[in-house]
Each structure stands twice: as C-alpha cells, then as structure tokens.
Amino acid sequence: MRRGKQAIGAFALIAMLIATLIQPPAPATAQSDAVAVIARGLTTPGGFAWNANDVLFVALGGSGGADPVLPEAPQPLGPITSGPTGAVIANDDGCPVALATGIVSNRTPQGRISGAQAVTELDGQLYLLFSNGGDRYGSHELTDGVYRLGGDGSLNLVADHTAFLQANPPAVAPPEGLPNPGNPVAMIAADGSLWIADQLNGLISRVTPGRDEELVADLSELGLTPSDLAIGSNGSLYASSFGRAPYESGSAGIVQISSRGEASIIWTGLTMASGVTVGNDGVLYATEMASGVSDDAPNGYANSGRLVRQAGPDSAEIVADGLMFPTSLGTGPDGAVYFSAGAVGTGNGDGWIGRYAPDGSVAEAAPAECEPIAETLSDVPDIIPTAPATVTAAPDETAVPNATEEPTPQPTVTPEVEEPWTPDSAAPTGEVVDVGLNDYWIDMPSTLPAGPVTFVITNYGTVAHSLEIDGANIDIALTHALEPGQTGAFTLELSPGTYAVSCPEPGHRDSGMSLVLTVH
Image (cartoon, rainbow, N blue to C red; front, side, top):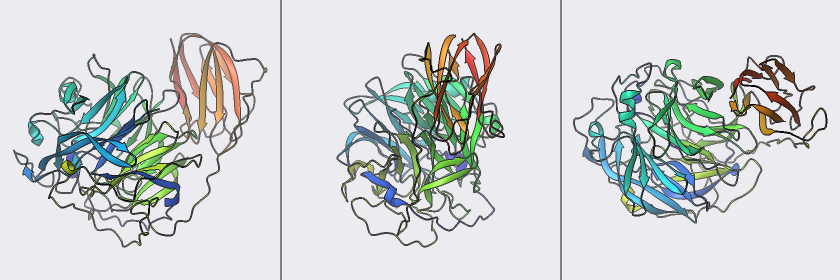
C-alpha cells in the first residue's frame, strides 16, 4: 500500500491553548536503534508516498516567511506570516530533489507551518493537498483542496475543499465557527480515490478525479479531529484523532470508520496522535507529535514525540521516543513503517523521514548531511518549545536525530503464523476474505458481495481470539479460539443484509472487537 499524509493541526486550535499546566513525563527509554533515517535535509516534512517504481515523494511545508497575512488574525491565532517556501520533493539516495517549489507557506506565532500538507500518487499521477489557503490566509492564488502536480511543477486544482464545505458543513461547528475555509491535513490514495481528513471540522471526504468531492464521515459530533488516515489490508479505514487544545495527556486516540461513516474508538490513551498506519505485522502503529504537553509548550515539548504500536485498547508499546515532532505515518512498499519528523522547528532543513521494520529488515541510511532545497528556507527563526534537558547521542549515518542516548532495545515478539486451517479441511470456495484479529480490533472489509465467502482468519494479537458472524439466519463461529499466530477459516453462503461480526471471547466484543458487515 502506498501512503501519503500530514498532520500539523489547524490554526484555529492554537486559539484554545490550555490554562492548566500539565508537567511533561520523564522521557521513556529510547529505542532509536529500531529506527533508521532514510531521508534528510527536509524543511517541515509532511505527507509522503511512493510511485510504482518505489520512488519516495514528500510534501514540504517550508519555513513560512516574513510577509504579514492581511487582514491580520487576532492573537494567539495571529499574526500569521507567509512566504513561498513550500515544496514537493523526490528522495534521491536520502537527499531531496525539488519537483515543485514556490508553494505558499503560512506560519503561526507558535511556529506551526501549513500549506503543502501531503503528496500521494494515484494511477501514475501525483496529487498535492494544500491547506490554509485563500484570502483569509494570504494565499490568493491557492485555495484549500487537492491539486494535480504537473511535470513542470505547476499546480492544477482538482477539488476545491472550501467549496465542498459550503455544501457539507460539519454537524457541530469547530471553535473557529462556520463558515471556515477548512483545514485538510492528511491525504491517502486507495480504491481509485483520494481520501482526505479535515482536522478542524472533523470531516473525512473522498475525491475521485473527474467527480465531485463527497463526504465519507462526519466525526464532529464525537469531538474527533482526524489528523491522519490509513487503509487496512482489507479496506478498513482508520483515523488518528489529534484532539483539540488543551492537548491533555492521554486524550487522543485512533478510530475505525465503517463504510456507512460510523466511527468506533478502538485505541485510547494517546497524546497528540498525529499519524496512524497498519504494519505488515497486522498491528496498528501511531505517532504522537509530543508526549510531553503543557501550556508552556503549545506544540508540546520538543524531543518528546514517539512512535508506538498498539498493545491493547488503551495501551501502547513504545517503538521509539525522543523524536522531534513526528507526524505523518505510512506503510511503504517494502512493508516497513515510515514517518516524517519535524512538524515544528525544522525551518532550517533539519527534518527527516524515519523507517521502522517490524520484521527487522534494514534499508540504506541517508547520508549524514543533505543540502536542503534552498527555496524552502527563510530568514524567519524557528520557535522551539523549551523542553526538559536531555542528553543526545552523537550523530552518525544511522542515528535518529534528537533521540535520547544509550537506547535499551525491547524485543518484539512476532508470532509464527501457522498454515491455514479449516474445520472441514475443504479448499476455500467463492470470495476469499482475509481477516485480521488484533488486540483489540478486527481488520476486514465492512461490505461484501452476496454468495459463498471463505473467511481466512489470522490472530495477530497477543491473546487468544476467535470470530463470530451472526445475522440473516446465520450464526457461526470458529469451533475453537485461535492462539497468537494461528490461522483458521470457514465458508458461509451470505445473503444480502447486515451481519454482526465480533470476537466472542469474554470481554473482547466490548473492548472494540466488533463491526457491522453489509452484504449486497
């Protein structure tokens, strides 16, 4: 799966900065040896994607600029300054090569950058997601939305997201009120469409080239602010929820969204969740832009970002910490998990892309130094929140920038998957659907065609799980629970209708292992 996304947060959220001080936690043990830096020299990197030839493209938010945005926004939202420092780049042996430059880059007093949010590839064409455009933010030539990237670096509007919002306002208005130009921050490509997350308005939409943008889910009534999107191996849609200011510790999470736009919270206890993806080990991963938050650091504390993997419905295992404001997260064509680091404070080109491979595979590291794209730099100094003192390791070709010293790796146990097993030892018939059981969520399609369907179920979790399907005169489950790493299967003749899918193990259904299957 090829991914591309960004999660830097809306200008409007800055206006709601917290009044209650929350002391940042002591840094956890860094596991920086698990992460390799594969691209350097990036100025506020955001969403990224690969093409069919496995070339990596990255959207760069840039460094803002010194030009005032008029009319001037009130504090703390403004004053906003702007400059043509955004870009789209290709990764060439670990260093950036410019594809498009001169894209408007806006900067808040707190150092947040917006503009070029994400880039992704669909049917051989590159698309850019642009945010905080229009007259309101001083970007007179660009509006919020999706642009097709020409071979000469030109941008051609495909979907006007601000116009879409006029016809599809959120059910619950954000703090900035309505109407607003929107704040699309994340974009991925899947199933012939571009999927977009509007963090400010709590909306997820879909753009199919040649057709109008359409609403997929309105999460505003749940107070969710989608910052990133992921498509599971079986078509399931996931979103990280960054949260609204004040960014209290543990207030963010991950949601699963059905084909009917219904959201189920499947992972809680995260802080400033800025990225989400499904690893090739079948487990959900997330980035926390900062795990240390307080009213002294509106973006969170520098070097307190983390890459984590789900360990339970409200718990996480730290893969790497001590990271510099990580955001966009995705699974690469090699099956490894990638993320961008440097959503704040990398206006000098210190941003980078990190790689973590659940299977332990290695990739070529970026050079120790890369020359940033000159057009992405400006004379405006970075604002980096003061963080508790940490000791940083001496840089080398594989070191993760800003990670704490003396990492203590924690082993990751990946269960060995057994050969598929079926109750009657019969060969699969009809549609074959892969189902992943995890702690505690189910990864499978939410819609299927009528007829015979063989469900091949693998337990990627750490405890025993099973699968039960009930509805339309059917009530069937695996005859025994699957232990971690085991695979089972059964075949059903599905009639049109709705079915309840769940794990019947005690307490698992209530912990998030349930969904509604629609058969057409």
